[in-house]
Image 1 (cartoon, rainbow, N blue to C red):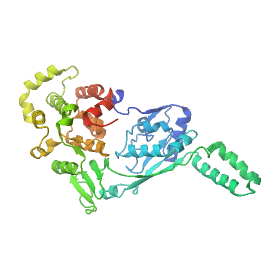
Image 2: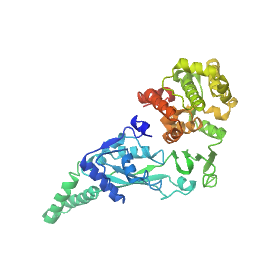
Image 3: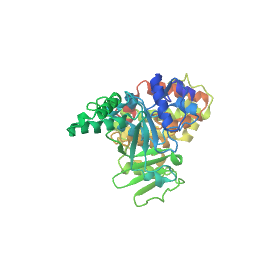
Image 4: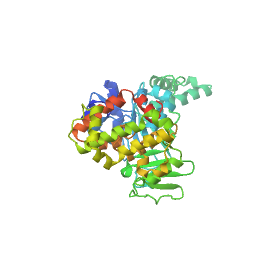
Amino acid sequence: MDLLYENELIYGRLLRVDQPHLVERYNRALASFGLPATKLEAFDIDRTGFSPQVAAELKDPSYLDPNGVNRRFIILTPAQASLPVVHTQFSNTSQLMYEFFTSNARAINALTIKDVIYGEIEDSVSIVNDIEDLLSINQVEFRVLSAQNVMGQAAELRLLVDRLKDEPDAWRDDAMLERMVELAKVAGDIRENSLVPDKVLFRHSAYWTSHFGGLYVFVDDNRTTVIGDPSAPGFRRSRPWQVDYISIKDAEQVFQFLAVTSRIELPRASWIEQSGYLENRGEMVIRHLIHALEPERDLGRIDRIWLQTWIHANASLINHDGTWPFLNAAKRDLAQNGRIDMNEVDPLRRFLLIRALPRHPDAWLVNQLISDFVPWDFLSRYVFNKPGFYSDYRNWSPNYQHHVVDMLKTMYLKDKDGLRKKLYGLAS
């Protein structure tokens, strides 16, 4: 994975922590979790405070996520709000953390001037044994603490201020006034600084989780839909009157669910032609076939002429796979009719032609699910499904790993927003 790290394709855009007082605060939070202090003088952190270097030092990639639920967090600075989340077992951890940052910006800004904020995103369960445990999580609560108890001292100071205003003779209590001075040295002017987060309860909505080999949970008004491996404990046994279960191996049912709930855009010339969506799919499948046939080939210097020559020379392999001819036929149908009758398309191949409805709140999650049906499209896997991409990457030959890294740097890293908008219709 070193190649990905060197090219900022894993653990990219993290925040460097190298100031002694911030390292000390981080260690205070680790101690509060019962973890040993880091001996590192500098390390990187994500939005939750997770550090890949600290994880390596502790030999525990789940040091902030010990049971896969009740995720821990460490906040050193408000700047963490703009960072990615690079290690989590729930896809919505990043969104929950972002909502916590934005809902409590004043308190976080004030607290992190003098202290570290840490705690847990508490679920209603402490460990996940089956799907029922996952479905019982309807909301989460941020249990927030600070190492020097700045929040507690601010609350105490507020009570004393109220007493000073409400009790006529309170100003004669020298001991109380001295205590207020001591507290103010820590908490500052509480009339100006909010030091207690106002919003700590958040709804736990649609998500993907790595539990049970990977599971999708979609939430609609009156139904919850679980998409995953039917061998997962609790599959089709938990709360059947409220929950629909769909095997991720059943392409027809997955497609019908996404279509009926209006979570996808069906292939229409209006967006397909201007996006270059099918052309991109075609390019991805040809590169995949080259790697499958010649895994040790150096793809670094290939160009479109070479690709066309290879396609003609390997027509038998390409026709046997069928994906490239199917995509070309789909482009012809769209050019002639403006649409494609999905009833006439094999269920698995339908996922080649669709994308998430860009305006739907579950768009990123739906694109992740679609990428599970098109695993050789390393671009969509990297954009929407990094756990899947990193798993794929480990099984590629070194030459293909280098090729994919070069392609991602050229196609995606140079203009992330532009590519997401063009191919997937997603605003930045």
